[in-house]
Length: 291
Image 1 (cartoon, one colour):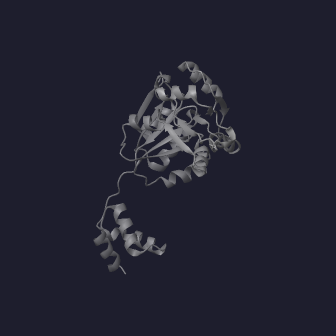
Image 2 (cartoon, helix red, strand yellow; image 1 turned 135 degrees about the vertical axis):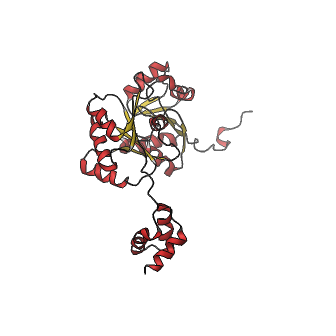
Image 3 (cartoon, rainbow, N blue to C red; image 1 turned 90 degrees about the vertical axis):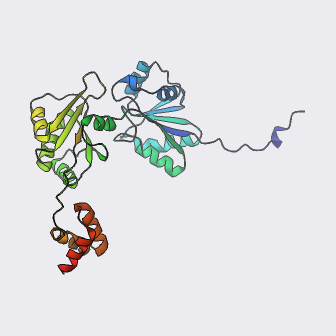
C-alpha cells in the first residue's frame, strides 16, 4: 500500500544554489575554457555585463544559453544584486560574466560576491584569461611582486594625488587606460616618476594586432605623441628603485616623525630600518644618541 503523503517527513527548503564567476576571453575566443562553455549552456541564470557581447561570444563558441540572461553592470548592480541573490538562495546556479577577463576585477561582480558572502552563499570561479596577468607576464618587468591600480582618475588633481601615493612603490604596478587618454597618462607618470622609469604599454592582448612597447617613460611618451593609439590598453610600470641605505644617523628624523605620530620607539625603528635597509640596532642607538 502506498504511504499516505501527509505522513511523509517534510523535506525542508530546497538547497541554495551557487554563484560562479566565469572568466571570458580578453580577445581571442579560442582562450575560452571548456568549463566556461559548459556553464554557459547549463546555468539557470547568466548575468552579463553586456548582453550583446555575451550573444556574440556564445555565437562564436557555438553555445546555446539555456538559462535566463540578465543584464548586470555598474549602473544597475545596486538594484539587481538582491534579486540575483534571492534566486541563488532559492537554488539557482548563476554564472557571472563580464565583457572580458575575470568578473569583479575592475569589472562588475564585487557587489554580488560581497552580498553572497554576507548571506552565506557558495561562490566559486572558473579561472581563465586575465589582462592584468597577461600584461605583467609580457612586460619584461619584475613579476615576483606586483600591484594592480586599475584606471587612474580622469581629473588631473585626483590623478596627481593617486600617483603621489605610489611614489615609493617598489612593486611593479599594472594600470588600465583608454587609448585616447594614454598620452596624458604617460606624461603624468613621467612627471611623477621621472623620465627613466621602465614601462611597457600592452595593446590588444591576445588579438590579431597584439603589441607590447617597452622602454622608459620618456621614450614611450614620445611614441604615444606620434602614434594613433587604438584598442584596449594595459600599462605596466616598473617599481621605484631601492633607496641608498646611507648611515643610521641619516634616518633618525624619520624615526622621530613616527614617534611623534604615537608609534612606539622600537616599532618606529623597526619600520624605518626595514624601509631603508639599515641595522635596527645601529638605528636605535643613533636615535638615543641624538636625544
